[in-house]
Image 1: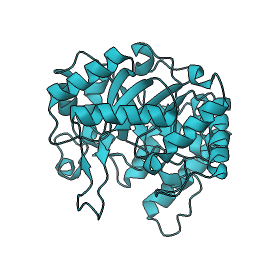
Image 2 (image 1 turned 135 degrees about the vertical axis):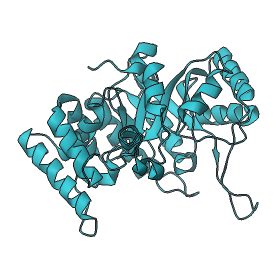
Image 3 (image 1 turned 180 degrees about the vertical axis):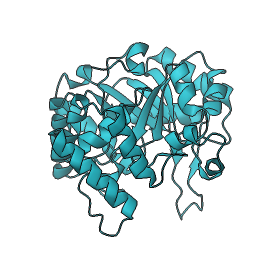
Length: 325
């Protein structure tokens, strides 16, 4: 097992994380059905059998039903809670036509505290191993967030804290106002979404103007021993079986290269895509968003795949569609 930054912060986490966004059925008020519980059991079992012991939630996933159905799995599998690491996120509030309010973000102390109570209730557990702030709130008062963290830690409801989709500057500001170390930053990163790499190689290049990934974020996380988790890691199956008939030549060429490497290494396309992320020295921990047991198992072989430097760069340049500067 690789040395992940998260494990140097007191946790014994797997190299892959199972993302629970697809659990619980549809994103509406329809009730949880028996087939949703069955699906959750099968996905969790596939993850556990593949060596995955970390599970990623958010209070908004299928409008809370993902946490509820996972809580049912925990209830029906006594002892499982003590064997796994559970993290969840809060801070996004959906809008609705009735109130006239838009989707917005809320890092107020009261909202964070209430959100955690809701998360724990839906999951049927006493504490979260990690709480992440989901998306940056422009109205964030960092001292108020720090006080929320203090209360959650003191009450035993949350053991560690992190963020999602935050820049280095935003993390620095928050860290100055809390004694709780930020141990995770979850960001969109994949073989398809490569802005996180282009930011570094486009220094002093005109192409940097078109890249929105915050400069210095990767380096800050590495310097501060913050675990980088990647969401969207499988790029929605672009390179591992999705119909790409209408995609660009760049995507088609990269998918063909992934398939070629999978054959050569006697593994799966999913494993190649994830191993490419994990080859980076930042120690990226991919979040696997599929609930399909076969794809979970196909992803798990990534921990056994090592790409050479030449293989890694060949995939990177193929995804870029143009040569490096």
